[in-house]
Length: 503
Image 1 (cartoon, rainbow, N blue to C red):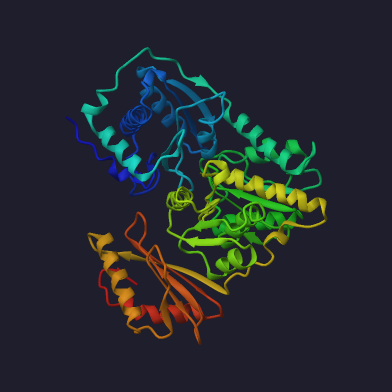
Image 2: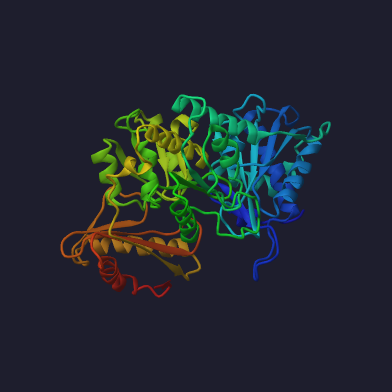
């Protein structure tokens, strides 16, 4: 029996690994054997979850523009063929579209896999899995890995008549779905006429949004850039959180006098925007925008966000929009699952969103879909344009913090999670005992330790442990120039006590 160690490929609710040579010190671990066995592990998991035989199933396969994507897709498909699965090759696709292949009747997929590593470098790749219930959770990935490593379990998959893969034009169906949302939302046959919208796809899979969604509805997309899929990502990282990427879009919007700019990550499950003045609608801004677009329809609903959102955002959501804000944990599945949990318990929660641009609406299957969020923004921009107003008016009342910083400290201890946990426990006691001047613990708090300062120094910090890496990030925001460094100066003596924490 062979020994496999696919645990290193788990990244929360995804699979991610090195799929190509090209970066010194990074050896391939998402190789052909791993893909073959993970494909079978997914199939075994799906048969167990649906109680259907493999030969009665349809599985769709899509990929982003990564250089290794096509070969991984082919290997994945060939690994499923002996079991009689109906395989639909969707080619270049987006992650949200792959889930929608389980919804669209012309595909009617039981399961879907998207081959992507989001915004990571060109040599990386990964797998995201869906069933008709939605994206799989961390525990599901753990189960798939157990299945993939087990010869005994995989031998329980019974071969059947192999079916050749079919080709499916998923992105046309998905684009038509988004066009219909805009037509219904704005209310005429050419709803985007007169709007100039720049789309930055970062050479990922998002170029379709400009050419297949916006342009057919009358938008001027002439200022759009980097729409061509290119797995080398030659222009900038395909990542709305990347400073260089956002600068590239703001410059384009300003130079071309656009009404709106939209930017996607590689697989289009995240998006952010730029307003007509060239100002970023990002991080706190994209959360505020996503919430403002549904505030009238769902008054008082709870918006679940990740842990690093600002106090000013809370004031905007609750004071200006009349919504409720639950600041939860990092990790898009964490915020989505919390929102679902609230609904199940009787509390209406229509939006789960991370500051990274992962936005999941209840009325869109709680699917983190960058193109769906972009579509809601476009609809509002078109309605405002007809009234002589601009998209910046939507979140004009949002106040941003004066300063914001993030520092990341390496944890050198062998059991980094336990060591980081002790640092956090000690910090909570340290602050509670009044040893940090002007500091009070923020409660309730669901991740790390959040501390607020009032008085001569005004702001807050959040110290937490990374979800996956031996790191402790600290986020600091302040209300006055220079206060971020003053806050860090108050925290540093505490942190410096820990030899295995590199500050």
